Image (cartoon, rainbow, N blue to C red; front, side):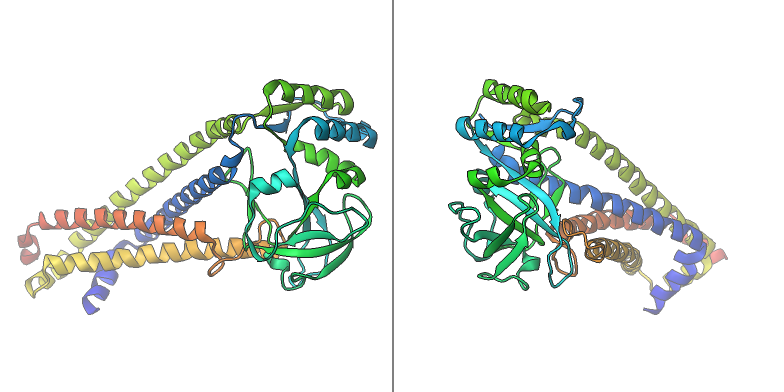
Length: 406
């Protein structure tokens, strides 16, 4: 410990400004590595989840960004015609998320009402921690509506409890019967950006059937069309539906298969990753060079004391261990800072009451965060190995006679 303290205070910190600069560069490199690793993990998860839609005959609607949408001119009768045509001629999956309402809960979070039809429910295959799956065979306004609640609402609204509330899309007073509780961190990945996720810890899932759609207002009708997925269909039938929507609602949709959505995503995502990876690699290269150079310069400045230590029994193996301990401390500091920032970012969603991003995890971090941190740790081990071995090799080339003469 004494010799380690000597090396840290008299050699490594001889030029503390350079050491401080190296810590900043190391943190930036770690942060970029962490961001890339977590993004890739999230994207991989998204691809796995959406793969069920990447089938022949499946087409997903997307509002054409170049079309001029005038939502004010859309009438409920027009949307009713569209859904009547849909129900008679297509098998489709519909899920509309994000209808926020104020519902009392333990954490005082805003609660999101999510509407899902049976086909979409089959595709998502949400896992439950308690209770039973949704039942779509109910009569609206005559029976209690079976619902699923997110993990964050399970304490306030356990399985079997009833919620009386004005539904955001029908504007009617409804009785909701909690049928089951979703697993923690149940989420949905975006069709067009699989690395983006919305979490359902504070959501209520309502089953949508034809009777419910008929009772719903324009909000659900229009939002439900935005990501609607036609199943077992053809490009011609998708075009026919687009023409009907355009004729009745004045909205122009593109119907792409999921592989086309993946291709569009990869075009800009891969290029962004390449740029970040290049920047990270350059930073890591600078860190290796700066750390090696700073250590060697400091040793040359303290060559007398360094030589004395060598003469009294400091072997190169002990020196190597000291170097690994020192750089291990530096890497631990940067990893600890990265951990705190990530945990605070996750916890910040709870403080800001952002229910869509509020997650449960070990020390605030979810699985993808921990995996990304392990990847960063592995990169740091490689960097540390490169710095230490390169430095030891250079030190061996320094003539000990220099120190003896001094």
